[in-house]
Amino acid sequence: MISRRTVALSLTLALLSGPAWSASGNAVKMFDTDNDGTLDLAEVKKAAAALFAKLDADHDGTLDARELRGRLTAKELAAADPDHDGTLTLEEYLSVVEQRFNAANPDKDGTLDAKELNSRAGRALLRLLR
Image (cartoon, rainbow, N blue to C red; front, side, top):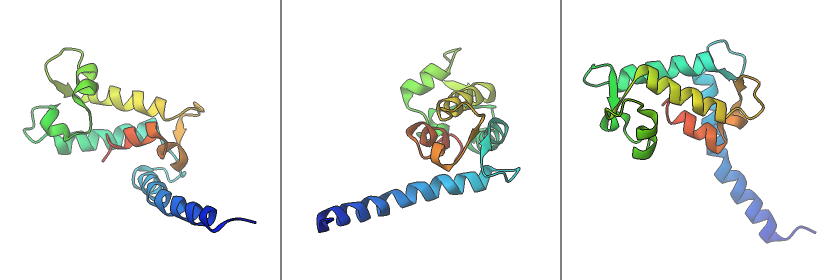
C-alpha cells in the first residue's frame, strides 16, 4: 500500500514540475513558426536574433553585460567573446545560441521538443530567447 507521505511527495513534485513543463511547452508554441510541435535551429536563431535587436538598447549592433541582463554569466560572456571587447555581436550571440541548441539536443535529431527544452541545457537555451 502507498503511504500518505509517498502520495504527498508525488503530488508536490507534480505541482512543482508543472510550471517548468508549461514554460517549455509555451516556448515551443511561441517560437514554432512551422507548427510542427518542435523547434529547429532556424526557428531558434530567428527568435534569438529578434531578442538581440530588442536588447540592443544603444543600437550599436552589440550586446554588453548590461544589455544581456543576466542571460550569460561573466564567465560565459568572456568565453563567447572571441575578440575580448566585452560585447557580443549578433554572430557571436548566435554562436552561443547554436552551442546551447546542440547541448539541448542529445538525440541529435535537429529539433527540440518540450521535454528537451525542460532539461538543464534547454533552460539555458531559453534564457537566450526570452
